[in-house]
Length: 379
Image: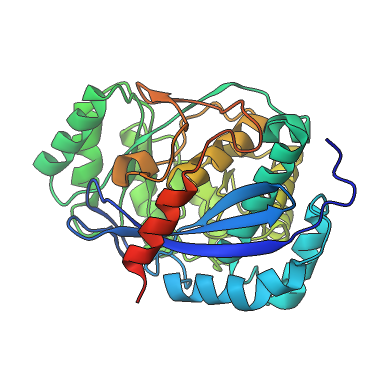
């Protein structure tokens, strides 16, 4: 199959409610609530006889994008800007998106842009009959180790959460902190329940520099390997100071929304670790650019997700495999939501995810189920 003459015909959005498996909270608020569906916005891009799928995860507690804003941004601005464009011109689409929704200080509407970008990657891979890794000519590993996310308010609750992950075969743990005065008791409880396991913490921008320096010393005593996003995303000067003073390597997540952000932190020597997150960075194209810059600059690479369902999980696995990320990653969607719209999908066993090998993302979406789910959540 050749891509010559294959242009984008349509872009469709579907807000689908997925079953919530467990509650989940961060310092900014609740991410998943038991008894309340977890909504994901799925995107289908069609070109001729081919189609690809993408996903956006509206979490207002983490980003400014909501279910309503993602749908209206794609339907009203991004889709009209790319109808008729060649499907292969992924770089051109990114430029068009920046004109449709301006980047401003950093990237604008990254979740909406990521959903369309991933769908286009999926479509191109399917049209050519190759996986995304083959499309890029870049795939260094075939499996990715997942971390079990621990978020709780007391040592007993946390120990139970660790035990649940261990029963499912998970051997690495990420702890959400910045939730209150019991943070260090939480970390201590996780370490006690999993003495030899890889362990890192995520503060989701909860601290000041002084607080982060003090906390880093306590974290070091528990053998924590990374201190993720302890400061507000735009506190570049603070990260400069913290990197010099922290007893634990500092990892950037929310701070890295665009490759230009990565460039700034590299030039100023303000980070030890760069975290890849497909939705945060506006899709696979920009995420690859960001990670390549980080790798070439000598930073350690880690991976994370946004409680994605299986479309987002597959996209992230392809990205992390391309750069050979071997440390455990936070792709926690399987822990908190059920991707009931999939047929053939990502295989996860004992906390190890197999990178899909089929065309495009390498998973199959049940379109009839997607449309049915979308009708259930329609206003």
